Image (cartoon, rainbow, N blue to C red; front, side, top):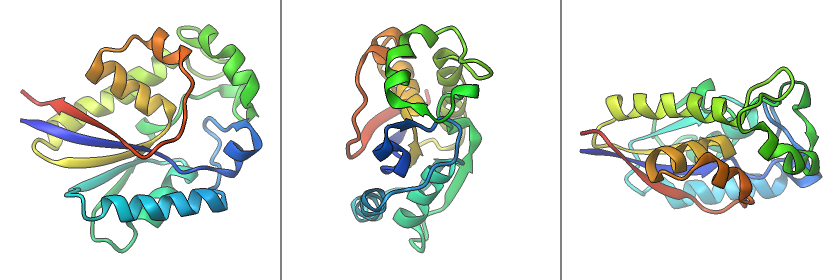
Length: 180
């Protein structure tokens, strides 16, 4: 069997709009982000979702609360779904993140982690999902590192390729985690 994973990135934050790479800082949704979260709920509440697994960072939690609050769909939070930890660079300008991203595939950010470490952390959580949610449809709300872990683990895309691509918000990505 399989676990159907619907990945949704947290909705737009005030940091996103200000050009800030939030990292492990909490962040808050902007007005646009709150509208996106409401639309996420409308899109997914009646989509056969069995559960929601969400990053524990505030911008993701807020997305899940707006989208799935009161729906009866169980929501759980896990720090394993956090964005890459940029360490002392959490909250850096997004332009600096974009310029330095490829240099940190295997080299940790100062006081933080590398992209490969972040993807490995998220992949461990995906492996746990395979064992605990066989046959289920799960919405996963996370960050860029979450999507990269899914693309790397499920689709075999090299991390070097993912790091070189621009990330743009969109409505959901769908993945199938083989449990066999």
